[in-house]
Length: 430
Image 1 (cartoon, rainbow, N blue to C red):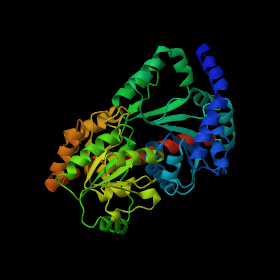
Image 2: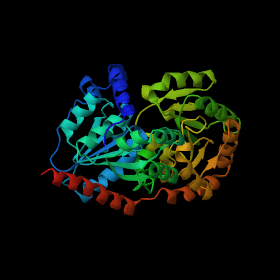
Image 3: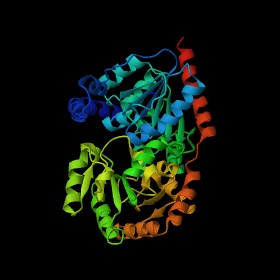
Image 4: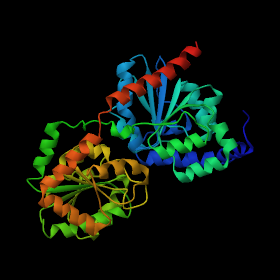
């Protein structure tokens, strides 16, 4: 199959843009405290050795995607100890989130930019036997390079918006060329499955959402008990993964709640900790007292708002609080996964905007496992109900827990399928 004129145009544009994209990507990692060498992984320069054995390369762009792959990677490491595992992501936040949770024979690197140089350097060093893209955009240069090198590509937990699908379908010849190396497509919803089949991937199948296979949070009971003790008996609720525009709504709800629950503590967890100074200003502007975790503040300080602006502790806050509001749902960013708080046995509240998890939230609502609120007033009213009637919060949590399935059978099947693809490629190369 020959490349199309549009594909050549894309390659030309990305070649021109690559120096600027590289400077931006490396600079962003450096500002987040990543070393120069590691930041240059975005340019395809590896900082770790390739292990022996069939290598499966998983790519998840950001925190949620990277974390969702960990149970599957652990299952592959358990079932196929001869496999080498590589996980790439694009953000410092995601690297920190998985740093101490990778299974044996696994390594993390930052993903190469979608340019000929970075992708070529990356593939030359790592020589993957299978590329697994998790909830990822379809990057033309990467997909073309894998196809040229006969590296099979699997789409895992694929999600494709209607807008993206329309763009690909509009240029069907280019889509067919770019997607020619994909051998497996595991979709998290029926809409994506149908889109991919329309684009020529007839093997596309809907499967269990990886984010529902997380199991209970790996937080020691002693840590939860110690943190709970720091509250000194105060009631608590959590607003997690909030985005710009949402913190103001959350703080309005909290001020309303303080009228009837004067010792109530809000643990506010912004999606991006680097926004801490902006959020801190909002809290103080609302006239609320605040303690900031990243500067040494503790729950014992007794502040009305505890700004949890550190990485990798969301599971702790979920385990600590009987009530969680999930951000990304009052603003149009697509929502965030409800499966993690469900696994932690906490009552889940969310706004009306969750396009990226529409099927998941539909299942939660059918099972009375979450509550949708429209704005700050509705959020305050619902939290007041749950604080006043803790049995209702407990019932919501109990209804949600089965939806966060352990997924043992699904993980086993995916482990076998992916390793077989990688092993087949490795054997062909002998």
